Length: 571
Image (cartoon, rainbow, N blue to C red):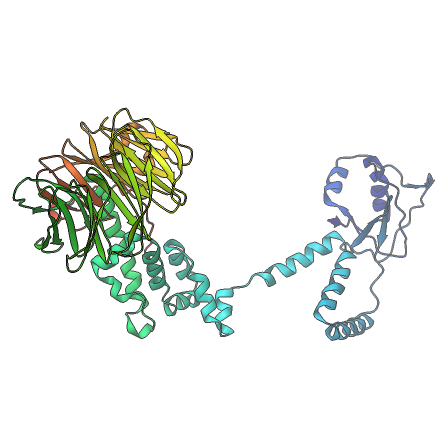
């Protein structure tokens, strides 16, 4: 920025001459115009100099002339065309002429199109000097700062302001409420706390399950605002939900639970080999050849299905059918509502150890070392597509998705097959003894073995990511979700593992097992779990429900160590 030195022409000329010391070309200054200024940084250096070099132009001494009407803040326009030169601005014409010219210019400007106006202003700016650019920038900066949340409702666009704020998380929404009354009004009238809760319920199974179990799902997803409570209700509900979630996570880590027990009372041989559950019922397959359906609330036996001539070793059901596999070598299909047998598949030569079905495809595996792939058009229309052979011992478990079929065997290997072509892809080697269980989802395979270990695998490259040690006998059943692995073994114990830590190679092995649950008096055969509970079955002829949500107050304490973190700021 150029700064005036004073009214002394001699001083200015000395300064301009001194600029030759800094490698600048000579300057020629007209005495008919006001002088403008030099950069402040140059002047600061000038102050330290005691002598002044004469100003020369083409090696000719310039006479010292004192200019008239020198203005301390008159701008200097510096143009560069290969050599440095200074042009001082002309004296402004009389104020009257300037005003007339300005008004005429504005009149023409208003008649132009927006694009022409922009082009003209760009041209003007390009002819200005640096300090003028800075002045324009200071003028434009506050004009470009807009409170759009306040401005949009003034234009009748409340819904856009609400939509913008609806993407905020809880912390940001709390902060937005404190900006001003207009922002608070937009948040309140837009029911944005309700929308935040609804978004969490749609995307997070923990929130969805909690809304159903706590009953506040009845206040969500109402089309008309008059159908539900005001925004203040949802704002006060949110921290209660967070407190519930933190309590559940703490219960999982600390092993606090409410235990319910179902005594299956098998007639001949005791043991519950398999199970599956939903919110209303539990379906179990027993060693005594029967299938029992239990009411999940009252724990009463609703129905007993008979027909197999051997132990029911595996089962799966959906809203229409139950499919079971037995040591009698058959697969049976039952109507889930009536219990009627709809179909019997006879293919395997020995016990059917495991099965899975989904989206018109079913895969079964057997003690006869084979895997059968079935097309399942309906309960009564099931045809064999392909038999997969490659294992050298009983195939104990299968799982699949649209890309891969994964099988595990007593031969210590896990084999991967293409779902679409049924062709062999690769073998995962690492377990030292036979493999009894596994689950496969996305790229992750988790397996349990009679070598007492659990292994995590990357299915795409076949690498073993982690080995979990802790069980004292064969690991018989295993399940995982996004946060944890739950395993059951012949030692009668159920262990809860931190999945995210297990996938982190830097995590110490001692930190991986979160809790060991000991209630079964026999081998644990099967388990399933969700965000709120584990349901397990055992050789002791019981089904246990481990409830981590409805824990008695006496079992609670102040110690909390939630594995997932939620932030909520109250006003």
